[in-house]
Image 1: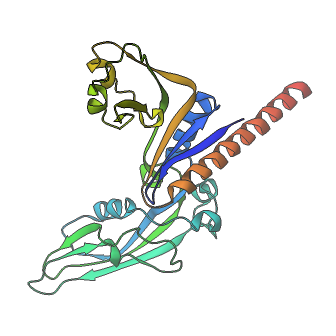
Image 2: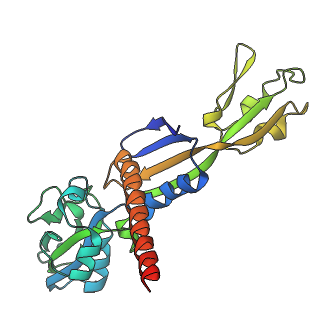
Image 3: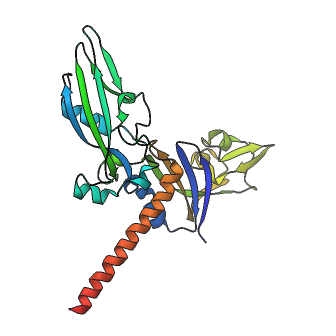
Length: 276
């Protein structure tokens, strides 16, 4: 029976323990959270005016890298494959508008809060303090940015996670006969996996990052450290476009989609081979 235990979570990150899950599937979840889960990002920028010191292409790239809120967009817009191949298809794009201008002797920094949704207020920059461009005196920039769903494997701007790591779950054994209770191992442990409580060592294997500092400083060699073969720690840090829980759940959905697609293609190939 597959077991999923939430170790910690907050609005930006989540850590879960996966038990009785093959390593290949656990790693597929990690990869899917970076490459397969769709999010919104700017894909086309139309400039109506730009007298700044930066070229259109530079500004467009900066805007494309601004993370856009995507929680509701996943259920509202068409999948990336349809929009990427079909161009301006209904249900694919939403637009954001930016206009900024300076007067004589004025210098301003244009931030992401100036990038305003035109049609869908649920697709907007995750923060308003991301700098885009500095406008000098009497300069102006006016543009319209078009965003669609995409996947991280297409471009990093569509990746919902900034960090996704998979590590083995530690297996810590303490030989109580050899242990002198000096407490040096707990002092050197950077994560609190080994702590001294009332003179006794207390072990939290789920906190261990396998750094082996406890093993190195234990002169009696009372500590042995290895890892479990059926349990893994998955850590996901969101870029802010999706909640970490949604990234994890959507990763499972995307893996299932790819498996079904593979199965259908395999059936078709075998059917064609049998027919010939």
